[in-house]
Length: 147
Ligand SMILES: Cc1cc2nc3c(=O)[nH]c(=O)nc-3n(C[C@H](O)[C@H](O)[C@H](O)COP(=O)(O)OP(=O)(O)OC[C@H]3O[C@@H](n4cnc5c(N)ncnc54)[C@H](O)[C@@H]3O)c2cc1C
Image 1 (cartoon, rainbow, N blue to C red):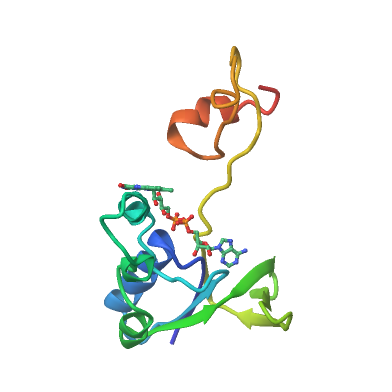
Image 2: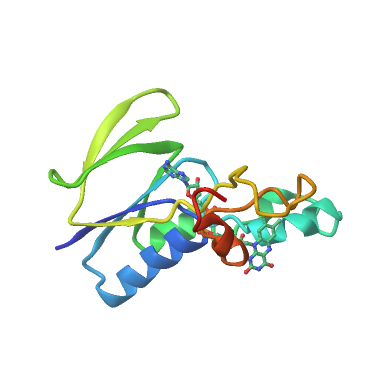
């Protein structure tokens, strides 16, 4: 039996976990998720802001129960803070400050991306000056560390 640890419980992490279980139902899938809202529909946020969706809690693609029924083991409000590749462990810390190490056979990192304030050439305002690491439209900007 393979133990798959996935860091991140949004679109990428959940999709990977569900697909792994689909391909091999014996796979033990652990999702380490920094927040308490796995599979949350980020794309639905504009509909909450516009008032079309009154309760943002209803915007999860799947409930925690749905995910657990599909065989995913959720470790919510637990942040990955380190990876020991040789020992095959992920170090985590919970919202309560408890630290632990989770062993893995396979590891997927699905933590999304963060904006960076790196300046793009020729930019004249703060919006243009902000690139995003790995975001496709900005990749040409970010690939040059001196840009
Ligand atoms: C307002 C808005 C509207 C959008 N609309 C659309 C749309 O209509 N169509 C579309 O295709 N895309 C849309 N997107 C983009 C889409 O939401 C993202 O592409 C998608 O969420 C990326 O998923 P991800 O799993 O890669 O990362 P994220 O959604 O960023 O998830 C990252 C996950 O990693 C976890 N995490 C991060 N760091 C750690 C850590 N150290 N330890 C543990 N867990 C960690 C987070 O808690 C989270 O669960 C929209 C985005 C926004 C903001």
